[in-house]
Amino acid sequence: MILIEGDRTNQVETIKRIFKNFRYVQLISLSKNGGYSVKKSEDYQGGLKVVFIQPTRVQLFYWFSSKIKTKIKYFIRKH
Image (cartoon, rainbow, N blue to C red; front, side, top):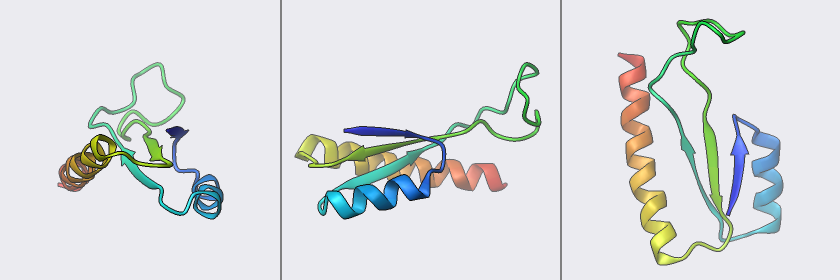
């Protein structure tokens, strides 16, 4: 398993070339930046990509359920 902070597309592209059967999910938060952050307080906190390089059945289940949860969170963020 590999964890990637934020939206590092170039890192995901590298992983695609190395591991053909990988799966990844973007995990996001519904929390906004705190007053201590250097980023705008009205913006949402960053995310994390979880990459399964040789996914097991359990990891595939986690991947699938997390994809659904992330989709719901993106919907909530937009509305």
